[in-house]
Length: 327
Image (cartoon, rainbow, N blue to C red; front, side, top):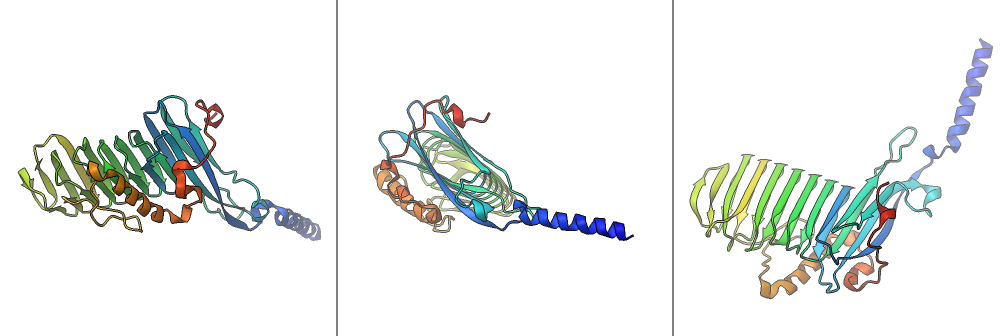
């Protein structure tokens, strides 16, 4: 019996000694790391972003040289003795081969012996020429896209989607989160699919489109719009705006659908509230104002170079960034 107790005591002491020095039990602290990239937009037709957790903000730039600028802020928990080392559980892969620039976030969680540490995340602030097609996929986090004149595809699982000043075709999907977008009078069409969340479509005053909106648990609301060939019920609406033509399809399971003649603008908390028109003669001034508002929305991730991002001197990625591609 004494031998067994002695053996158990020795095992316990050995385990305690090992674990006390083990990095898994050391206190972890939050660390942020900023990275910046500048890529030539010459020959590019589209950009895609895939993220796991964090905000994604894509907006048009007034940069006449045609560059794509990427500002990313990594956040993760690290051991106290590793605060001076780069974050190693977040990798940003950038593929510049071909006409599409692909940005992908790879993360892994660091797990402690007794408890799992906080997961890693990346906030993106990306500026692109307005004529690029944009595709954004996020798992946990909001998506904001502004001033992009071409097609936009945005998908998120948990987070809101806000799109402003688009003329291209919009394909917007969210499982848990609201979707709000302003369309231009020259819109190519809108397709919104939401499970849990409301949908707001603004800027419809001068739009020619065939509209179909529906909700299972909620209402379809219309403000200052005149439809022809309208069939309207509490939860469904179909009709023609103007001359018809482009397709606007909106569907949510749990939430309200709002169709408004006026445009909306971002409030500081990222939601939408008031008018913001994008007529050609006022494009530059209004895009500048929208950028200011979005800067406030992303104030927690603002850097000195963000204040004048169009002229910042960042290292340009090679045209074929093979070293950044997934092996």
